[in-house]
Image 1 (cartoon, rainbow, N blue to C red):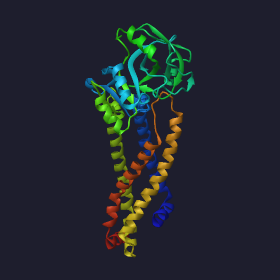
Image 2: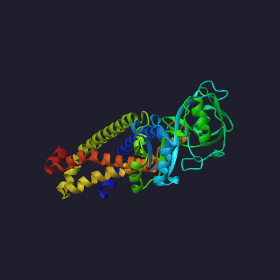
Image 3: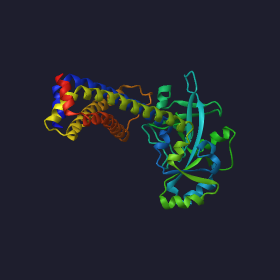
Image 4: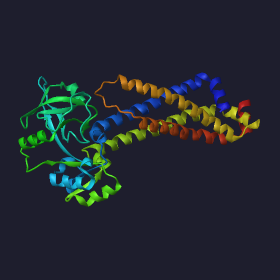
Length: 369
């Protein structure tokens, strides 16, 4: 490390240029990862933030909520297995609603939940709903950008029903559409007005909070239904898996390109220092010590560049418009930073191999010539 830091101090301009390049690469990696995570989060945040370990859906629904339909009897069976506080119904329906003064319809997703249960949305503005409140809903705060206001009205042209926005919640979207929460009474009115009324309460899924033993009981407790994990439910959201595949491929190629770029830069610098390494070897320096000095330089530059790029990414995320999907949690930040440092060290292995193959006499002769 002594040799690595001494050389960095001696050749400030050269290593400053490399640090700037690494800074730009790490910032690009972090920023693109944040955008990819934001796009993913905007698709499934309503499910990701639910207090549930899994969901019960109809067996032949292919894990998709919209293709599933369950009855009140199946809800009772689930509650008998895990307890009434650990099983809550969930109704899901897409709609295009209108807002007074708006020129176009807004795509939303209705979620029908027990307003006293675990799926009730946290309120960031306005008032919470009860199961007895009629004609009121809680909407995701992103709808504010489309002209929805507290106390404003949402109208569903298909059913002819209207609701007053009693409150707002945050980070609740499903299939890239803001979620609007309603209680059981309004859900039944919506289903009836849409021509989908049936005897008793019907919904799309049952959200459960179950331990391993309770999950085993649930497997056979609800006839005509199956228990899926939250991860399976998220993967079944329309378009989610295909979208994630494309984004993951983009990020992987970004890491590969970063590794190649960094490898080339450090390899060129190593070639330029061949004579210096030869002299050091001739004076007794071991190849392992010289190889470690190269990797120490890469590690030091990577850490400094990563720290600055994290600061820039945080600043950029706060300056971006609220409608732009960007999400970077601590886990993703640490994982991305660790991968970048790993890629940088892997890229330096080419230079390390070059150092171990340097012949002292040949390098000294080349320097003398």
